[in-house]
Image 1 (cartoon, rainbow over the protein chains, first blue to last red):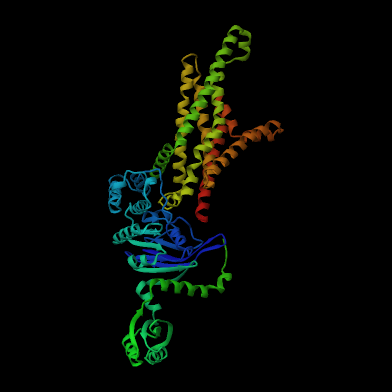
Image 2 (cartoon, each protein chain N blue to C red; image 1 turned 30 degrees about the vertical axis):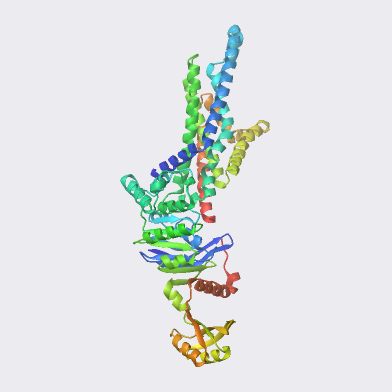
Length: 326
Length: 258
């Protein structure tokens, strides 16, 4: 449905994105993650035909964006990061204008507007000026605008940025409702959001794709080594000695002690086997009293930070060798 | 065509939503009325004097059209010098500033349609402004005989000159995201074409006629005297085409630079 191949974009001498390739299948929700300035918006702007790439190509709804931009844009709904709106128009007039711009007319247009006004909860403000609306409502108008022609592809650039927590939940629910059979690309730097709505993620960092895949597989890949946190009351040396002897344990780290001679350990283990019961046995063998045991899961944040920081080291040398044209 | 119409309509709604529309229209009406009544009153005095002096009357050959309407119509270029930048300054720069241009450029829409919509909207406003001034020859015709051929040629000239002024304004607006800068740029370009005319007076031939031909305000003069010269028509239309072309280039550049 959406295909991006070897996309490169320079802003003068600055690298926007370098050699980005990915695909999104029909009906899939792709989360586009990355720190600020990583190249998320650049990629999205190229996909929407707003900006031509220096090299590479992009397909939206299987139409080449550079070759036939108008055809591709007809199949597209786009919510830019800044959610630009005409403050002097009423919500209805604005949606009517956007629908006309997208080539709708007559009953088709009326139906489209009525549908998005309903689905985005804009009935109460339909006749108010956009300039007088709250940020949450404006964001909804932005979403309504993107969906008014019921496009098969939706591209949303940070749809929840700058909203208060209640509004974020609202918009997120709205996006989850929209999923259906639409293909959706959603950029964000709020990680839990990705967990909630996306089927797959592309992590982009310094203009390159740092990781790509389904969330679970990404996490599983990174979690080849697991970690278990154990707290126990007892002699620290004896405890760590016994635990080291459990098969699969690679290293035991004493991360601190608290009052009452409670010691806290991080146990790093190889492989994906669950060794918690073995560790509990080891603690008893060292005559310790177990107070807490917890399998540490790699959160998306850890994943993100690992990928981003790993990429940084790996990226240091070749920067100067980049061909800088344009 | 469909898209152009909707862009034009949206621009007109926005224009009349802002106070600037009413300020410009009011200023225009007051200024034109001022010029007209001044010319009308002085013509009344002069015609009385000439009636008493048939010799001088034969010498000067003053008609109501030349004495009253000519100065009023000529003043249009001077007013346009200020009004055209004000009318056009927001058309592209406001969209750039508010970021709405990003959406406009991702709609299935050609750059040419975007330009045409904006151009037509401001042309429409200008035509309304010109339409208001038609009352002056009509009032005049109640007292004296008005030469309607000259009046129509003058209006053709004013429409064409206005179009050229407005396209320069649009071009300046497409260069910047700041409305004031856009207005100043348009004003300076238009002013330069007036200064070119001043240079023409002191320059020798053939430079003088080249400079005079380049001057934007110059070309209205023939129309006002009832002469429709294809050179003037082609010059004014070419200004439109040139500015239109440059606006499209400027939009392309804007897309590239992001």
